[in-house]
Image (cartoon, rainbow, N blue to C red):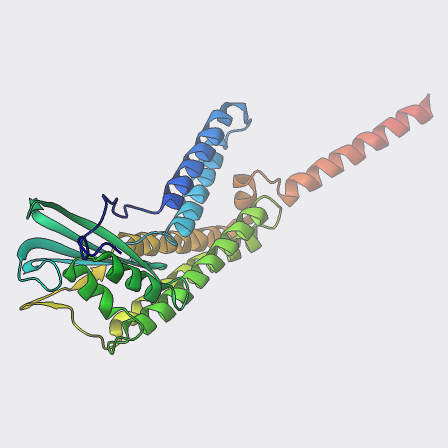
Length: 309
């Protein structure tokens, strides 16, 4: 290790920005949606608009379920304060310190006000993962070796497995079950789409309802960690307070949307089942019976004419 550089970075670095898998999910969703829009004119029938809305709605639900497993803003918080910049130094900087918690880890940001201070660019966004039991400790140890700024290390230390705050255990357990239940919701979403393509609409409705329930239970699992006693993250007299982020509320809105749709479809199934079958381009039993009777009468008429001849 270069002793003349430590604890500063020995080379230019790029801060963590976002998970590239989210971009891949968005691109795949947009391409799939564009494909269905292109083939829309080739679909016959009066319900082509309903078919397109159903497809786009299903794509939106599925993409949200997958994407929120990789986002980093389930819980967010930030403070602006004047704090020590580096370890073993009295140099102070004015900066904004942010905390972003996801299902796979935590991001800690440090951005100077202004960004250029002390002949440096103070703009950090460091990722600490807890996908495995020891991965977070490994990332934290690497951060110490690279000489991350003191505010970043101070916040990261609170989530260390050896910290008396026990935030690591609380968040690891809650995010593990939240992610697992969210993937269960994704499986239920796939089954609902398969059943909606078959004359088993009521079971498709049940699977859509299961998707909504799984998403809401996943959110409840994540929210329980906020009710547990935890250490406060102090910067002088200022405390870094967190709140639910965009991914949490987007998941909540999507789960509620699935619940409302499933209840509406179930109500239509109980009151007007034939209408529900026509909406999904399935002929109802009366039409099939009438068609069968008509074919039978035509066959009988043909046999009669043949006998007369």
